[in-house]
Image (tube, rainbow, N blue to C red; front, side):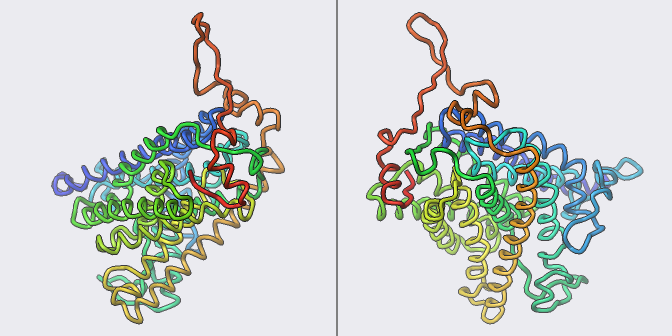
Length: 471
């Protein structure tokens, strides 16, 4: 990349570096969100699962993740050759030492960093379904294998020109034909996943569901009341996730331009509407609104708008977000109906809202959605969006089931019942989230379990009624 080209791309480079930093912040923010939602005696374990993921995926993305996701040597449209750019060979600078230009014009190394942060947060999201009961070592092994066999292939399929992309060999082209655009042959009805509805949220949500079924319920699931041990921490985590998401969605415009601004505004509008949608469901169903509902509604809105942020108007973003928030508020109750222990509502928030956002853009995409003037092409787009969502669900379910079962019968997933009762923080990490001193300044650990039914009558009523209420 010449110095003149570097100068011309300075603004875009600055925005993408900032976006990458914002998305990187989302993983520690998720640690706060999950840590606050968990029990006191498992808060550190939940945070460690996010931080451990950050360390591991950051390394393997450099080694083979970029190559598998965005290499040119595709394998059946499913993934790229992991050795083509292994260790970022031939991806950063050329033989003369000049920075290689990426697809958007700025240095390719910036895009590599940006995409790395997406891989990290996607894997970390899954951990919310496993609170209180799994070995940290097994989680870390799963994270590396799942990123390799599920995330990198999905990124290639959707964003790397593979099976779920707008390429001439993708499913959309097979369904409705191709057209010539700027000298390239592309799908006549191109699928839309602006920032990761399939790649991130459906992918992680399905994995969370499959693992919850394989690993089984915690010892107290639907037997004792359960509540977040630190709601201010949950709200802080949600706020930081919202802040980081502007890099997640705005950065997916790949430049400091009007599309980034539109994505920013749509992300804000949809998230605000989703929070209100969730709170309305709580008010109608439960008779009151909660801080946990507000925080969860924020995340549901962010998830809903992720695949659609660059293809909506602010008005349709409000519609998409409000429906997404309401659906997620209802969706978190699925674990009680079907009795699977999705501890921190990954399925209800990420899978339900992710599927809605992926399908909803087929209805609401500006001037081409089924309900926004797209006509017959709008109907085709809606069908394409359904198909890519279904394929993503099936692919991730199969891959996760194979990995999850293999680890179950080799390393084992579950900590012992005694360890679960004692608290996973102390047994897996030899630490406690909170320490106090008595009147004689002698330090002791707080071991009280704040998850009693008396301490949360709302949740106790949920269990009695057999229906989930989000407090």
